Length: 106
Image (cartoon, rainbow, N blue to C red; front, side, top):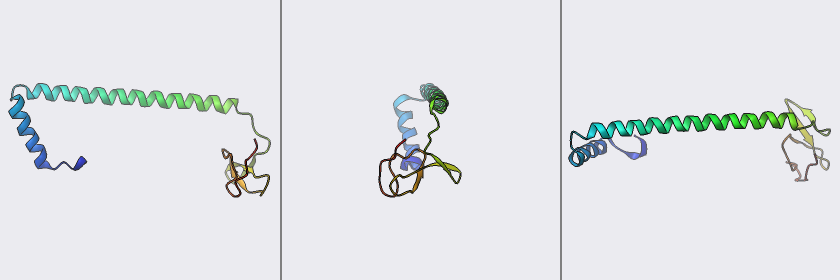
């Protein structure tokens, strides 16, 4: 069970809630919790979708605004930056050489 809650703990919680709130208020409390959880999920889903849209917009804008660099070479299936000092190829987004640590120029 999640959070280390055993079935017996759930039974004890249900009995305590029944004793505190009574049998007439428990359905109201359950409905309120259900609505709150549904609203939370809905809000989270909206926030997640808007975040994905913003990331896609920024990626589209960045892809258009980035001019192709002259010192990038195709290595395998990705663009690579050759190190001016050791000649090792580095990923396109690298700022420093993975082999010798030299700062890579754009």
